Image (tube, rainbow, N blue to C red; front, top):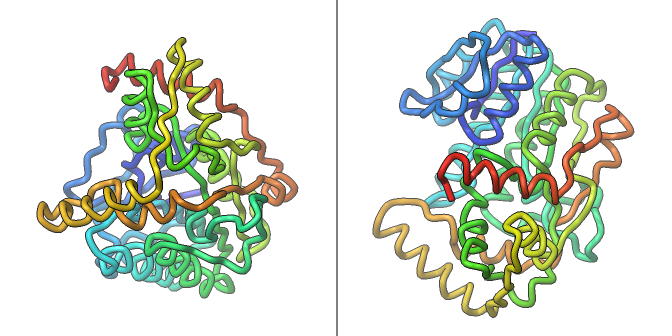
Length: 326
C-alpha cells in the first residue's frame, strides 16, 4: 500500500516507518518543515516521500492524503502550554486529517491514541473501551480525536489503538528514570505501588502494522501492552538488573509532586516552553492503575508482544550508553 504516516520523525514513528518499509509499503511521511529526521536515517534504507504539513493546517492535510491507500496517524502533543494547543493538534487536527482522508477515498486509517483517552482503571484490572473516563486535557483531546476519526468509519476502515507507556532505544521520555538510576535511586509517587502497563516500541510498531494490514472491522478499538502489569517498584528492580546494582526507590508524597507540578506550570508559562512535569501529569501519576491487555487484538489479528520488560529495559540501557545519552 501507499501509506501516509504522520509523526514519522518521532520516537515511535521511526519504528513504525522502519517496519512498514520492511513490509514493502510505499511511504509518504508528513512532517513540518522544521522537523528533525535523525532517526529516520537509521530506520529506513528504502526511499520515502516527504511532504511538509502541520496538523493545524487543514489544507496541508488535504494535499498530504492525495493518492494514498492508507493513513497511520501518530502525530500528537503529549505536553503543551495550553488546553488550546492540545485541542488544536490532538482533536481538531485529527478531525481535519480523518475528514480529508474520507473525502480522498483512503481505504484504511489507523489512529494511534493513548490509554489516557480511556482513563485509569478503577479496580486495577484492564477495562473495556467504553465508557472512557480521561482525567487530563491530553486524554480528553486524544479521545476527541478518536471520536472525530470514528465519524469517517463508514467511508474507510478505521482502527484505533490505545497505547500505554512506550519505551525503548531512541526514547527521551523515560531517559530521566535511567539518569536517576545511574545514581542508584529512583523517585516514585507515594509508595511506588501504583501500577501501569507498557510496551516496547518495536512491539507497539508491530501492533500498528498488523492493524493496518489485517483489521477487518471498521471502528474497532484495540489496546496493547507487553502482556504484564508493573508497579514502579517492579520497574525499579528491572532498572537495577540492567545497571547490575541495587536501585533504591525514594517515595515522594503526592502533595510534594503537586507542588512541583504547579511550579513547573508557572515556569512553562514564563519560559514559553512545555516542560514534562505538569500539574496535569501529576494527576495522571496519582491514579492507582493505568493498565490494559492484548485480548482483543490478539484474538482478531494474531498479534503478540515479543519483548519482555527485563529484555527491553536492558536493551534500552545499553543503547543509551552506546549513544552517550547516559
